[in-house]
Length: 67
Image (tube, rainbow, N blue to C red; front, side, top):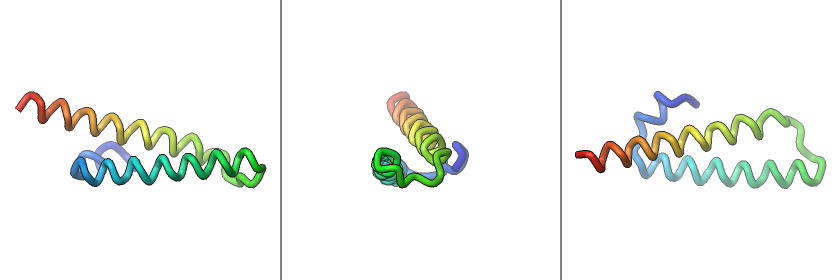
């Protein structure tokens, strides 16, 4: 997922995406704690996707505030 795709989404869709990513991160942390994690690189990508979604949400909020 890249920032251009996220900018095309509405704030509600972004919040839903953020919620899904946080749930996935939570599940990955449990997998890591129990030793069941197969793809350790997935944690890094999920964390970065969360950051991207938050960044785009903040950009949209700032843009709405100036209008």
